[in-house]
Amino acid sequence: MKTAITPTRAEDFSQWYQNLIVAADLAESAPVRGCMTIKPYGWAIWELMRDEMDKRIKENGVQNANFPLLIPIDYFNREAEHVAGFAKEAAVVTHYRLKKIDGKLQPDPDAELTEPYVIRPTSETIIGEAMSRWVKSYRDLPMKLNQWVNVMRWEMRPRMFLRTSEFNWQEGHNVFATHDEANADARKMHKMYGEYMRNVLSIPCIMGEKTPEERFAGADHTYTVEQIMQDGKALQAGTSHDLGQHFAKSFGIQFLGTSGKLEHAWTTSWGTSTRMMGGLFMTHSDDDGLVLPPAVAPYQVVIIPITRDETADDLNAYGHALATRLRGAGVRVLVDDSDMRSPDKMWKWIKRGVPLRVEVGSREMETDAITVTRRDIGKDSKKTISSAEFVAHVNDMLRQVQYDMLAAAQKRNESMIHNVNDLAELDAALESGKIGFFRIKYDLTTNDKFDAMMEKYKISRRCLDDNDPSYVFVAKSY
Image 1 (spheres, one colour):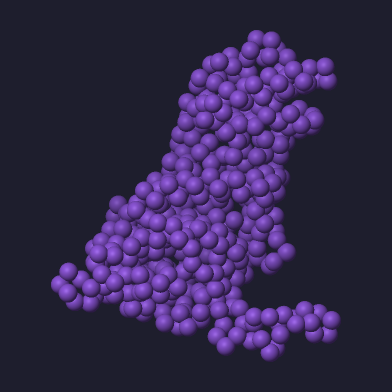
Image 2 (cartoon, rainbow, N blue to C red):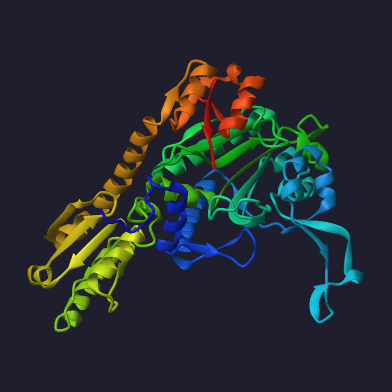
């Protein structure tokens, strides 16, 4: 059977993913090594994802702000444990001027900075410094801040949306008077991420705490949201960190407590990024292209007039009148009245993953009807109904698509989570090519034998099982 994306997922999942990005017109590689240009359709998806996330962030009492892109290198030196996690990925600005030398613009040797700046890989340090000035009293707490920005981490093996040198994200940074408050908030934001993935992206997640070996540098606790891709690999989609007092002590974040004594605060940080887009695309898409949940689809409905020259004007007008009614119902809709062949229009929007595809031809126009097909389940869903019925029930249909996509992903995930009793059983499963997440006693993974298996199979500890932290999930990952 011919498919729009070749090779198929079964033939070469990695190449399928790269070709999917191109076919859906989402992004392209940029002239800058390891970076990507997100094209308008891809950016429209990100905007919807961002706006839905931003609502949830603000509902948790967080305010948005914006901090500098360049961070003095001295700030990183104040938090040695933290910087160790980013040192190999840091991009550094060393000069402040260009000069033409031998006919080419180059950094001016006489314009070297006294102190280099690190291009923001994450902002705990510079936000911590600001908080040390903004927090004076217990009355200033809790302070909850977030920023939507781009960051730079020099990536050696880039892959669009999953790992790029520059990417977009939100990073939240909160400060509290007590450790109990900080830890509770880190867990709260972690759960918020899980709810967002399920209800907005239709992606079920494995939620849990990172093991000590895998936690964020400088954190006391790291809570992660892990997704299972169709090829069985793990994707870390969001993290929330209880930073204890490490950053508060490094940057002097202190407050006058109710006792009248000066105390160090307790801080958290939490973030998600455009990596979520890669997870979204890999979780739901098929060999014909993108499949988008309605919540983040730039167009929830596309109307395709099936025209001949003598009917084109009337059918296009019929399509636009229908679109006006759908917009009145709060639906994001596009009428494709371009002069492309009708089959080409259909394939274009199939590849772009529009949840509901509506065809209107002369027969539909004569009976005031439409023919609708769901992208997630394809031709088996195709049916013709009156335009009035469609407008009345379109939001119910979209909600059903959203729900069914989550259910389908959940069913697939369940088939890829395996309980193993010991390292020998884990080794046999991996050797046989079994894919997915493997649940095993955590204390069995803290020895040299497991370390050797990590090297052999390229696996890692993803997170402890939230329901029983004596177990850990192990998987290959992106």
